Image (cartoon, rainbow, N blue to C red; front, side, top):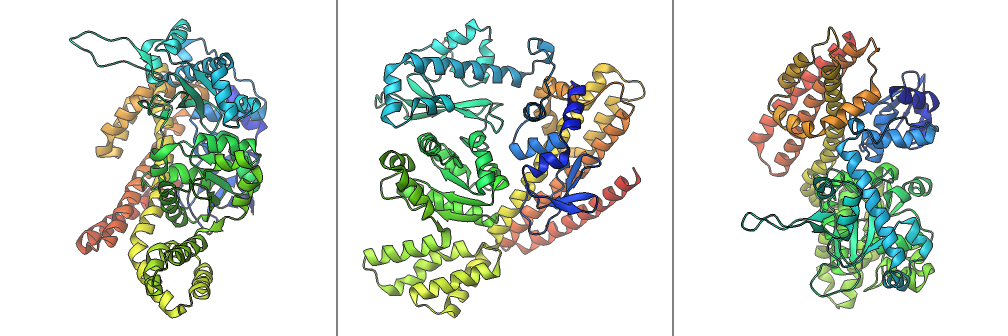
Amino acid sequence: MSSNVEKIKERLGIEEVISSYIKLEKAGKNLKGKCPFHNEKTASFFVSPERGTYHCFGCSMGGDIFSFVEQFEGLDFMGSLKMLAERAGVQLEFDKANNEYKTEKEKLLAIMEDATKFFEAGLQSSKDAQEYLKKRGIKSETAKEFRIGYIPADWRLLYTYLKNKKYADNEIEKAGLIKRPEEIGGVKKEYYDRFRGRIMFPISDSGGRVIAFSGRILIDDGKSAKYLNSPDTILFNKSTVLYGIDKAKQTIRIKDYSILVEGQMDLVLSHQAGIKNTVAVSGTALADSLVSKDNVVNNLGIIKRLSNNIILAFDSDNAGRKAAMRSSAIALSLGMDVKIADLPDGKDPADLVLANVESWKDVLRNSKPVVEFQIDTVLKKMTAANLDLRLLPQALRENVLPFIAPLTGAMEKAHYIKLIKEKTGLSEESIREDLRKIEASLNGLVAEVRMAEKLKATTTRLDSIIRKLFGLIYYLEKNNIPGIDAKSHLTSIKNISGERYENIIKSIEPHKDELLLEAEVTFSLDNNNLASDLNELLLNFEEDIVRQEFSETMSELAKSEREKDDQKGQDLMKKCQILSIRLSELAKRRIKI
């Protein structure tokens, strides 16, 4: 397997791979561009074709072509390996039937693939399900493209099918496909299918591997949920996945903008209409996750890496409008260019596509920058309700100025201040005065959002380093390499990570087989540099532990400033200074290596 890694690197230069994702320009022997992993105005992301590596001096993300694809696409190592192998025309040589190399994640992915095929066959056998999709406007070729399926309203159809495929109960359960009631009187109940009587939409990761399902009830009995999604599993986290991202990503890059809709039907019909740069959140839980500080870069961040421009096309009901506005504020704080699609009352994108494809395209063409959309919405509501115009300044403070405050460009702000003046007759001076007050109140929130983005980048890099570090240690332990004491390095990790050590061990040990496979793929026993590779990883680990603590402290500092907690702010500032000195010392150590 390690020879396959080298073959891929020989056939795919890092410049070729990364320039297919972001724009790069020459910088001496290297290339540079704006980092796709955090918001920046000045390029600090450098690619070295000579070394086959990249590094961002802003957020410290770095690595080779495999780690870049992992981080950009949101894939694991095996996902990036398979994607790049396909691109390079390299046939991967490892025996999937050999359990020694079959990690838990690989098994679960195989289960999800077999389940998808089962659901696809179920659709072909059900005239009612086919008729439902036809009624909703979905063509048969579209259903095949999105691998839409169906499962009848029976209790154990999928379970029986997967058991016949020799999968174990606990594996099928871990994939989120079956459930079992609580034990009653010490008697274990039988497993049953989680999805029954539903149209099945497979949810894929960025590499096209099925990791979850969303099932739409075919016959509404008034008791069951209309939509049922897979639970969180080791494959699927609903706050980190966008439906259709695998099919939309290339078109988003080419067209340089994305369209975000709410549901599967909206997305499928939009793609069927030829608008393939559409992605979807699935239900309220995902829409809410867009505006969670901790998850903000999981959804909007994925889209932002593909393009900075986005059109939000949420449903026209109150919940949809509110979700669009909340998401807009966060996207603006991340430096994105946000437009809002004004859907007719009571309509969603699927309705428009079904009625007339051109009407959906017109809505997108006529989408407005979020600030302009909000100004027009405020004026329209006041006119419709015949409200006293003396209420206008307050309405603007509440509904318009909060969307101007996060903008980073002075010219942009000046443009919208002038626009408000032209549309309302209010003086620029009064608008600026109110905007300054809004900016002061939002400064802490905007800083928190941007710090959350940077912290996410740091954490993602640290997670990658932890996986490589422990994978190599497990590899060395297994093969007992002379002159390298793997246990002493575990002690070093414990000393470096301090209180974080127990959580790191707890999160990493369940994936030991998976990490061992990754190490066996990446490293070679006849490599004389294993000891130096391990020391390099340890230094990277220590740097990133300190960097993560620094980012977390800065995030707390932004919050303390927002809450006007001066004493806490001073203490946090001192801590930041200490951590900054430690980072400088680690940088000097790196120079000596």
